Length: 376
Ligand code: FE2
Image (tube, helix red, strand yellow):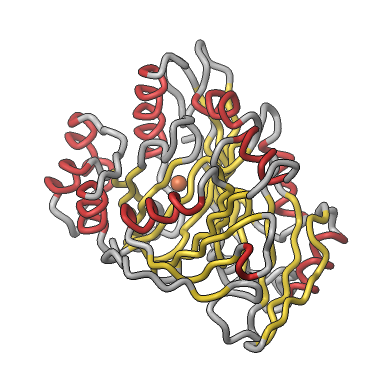
């Protein structure tokens, strides 16, 4: 057994220097935010929440904020050239720029992380309107991705100052998506351990699970992965690195098209994966195909589950187990033309971490897609 597990909660006498209450929002830089917002509303069941743009005094970009339960996405487009967001999109395509984290004290979060070596992205800034104030600060992480710390305890408005309500007559029914379960980063050769150390040292996270290239490999390619978690387990960041194989790994394909390190997938929680995925498929979202052979042996590996196997097999839902319970998960195909960002839908039934078997099944499914694109 190559994977190693440690308890998911930090038992320490020392106070957590970066208490996090989960993911506040995920911001995507996209080529056309208006259309992207429509896509996420239609396909995933988000509702319109807020808008900022020239009409609200933001002259160089527009942002649409959409929400479903505790899941908030911000979709941002630059309006002109000579804009770092335009450069970001030119280089990476549409992708995740900001993983924003909920904190009680954004100033303290900034001070604690930068004094431990975090590179400043945004010094603490207080944004005010009639609904109170939001404090933002931020640091860089892998690639051009950043973490913002969002303090909104003194704010009663919809999203944050600078945004106005976005009312829409088009309000598709929810698909049952609840919140961000985890966000996975792809990092370069020999960069997994430095980024593990970054999350340990700068953000006080712990490595709760590790997979090496023996765990996650096929005949042709391999990757390594380490899962980082904050103290209360609300924020989990697995970090992937390619490993040597006979052919190009999926992480390298990502680098070729994203032009560097970045977010590989965002995993979103549901309380009923069969209902959620059935609805998403109906709305046109495509998921990776899992061979029937996976389902012949899966219950031998994971033991008894509450669900019938047949609907899971029909949808391609994977099943895995850790020490605390099991989980159900499924992976979408890339959400855009570049083979970069995709989503995972996950339902946890006791498991707080991840299993090893699904990594391999996911890897093989991704490799089949990669091969079909001629990039293996
Ligand atoms: Fe995942």
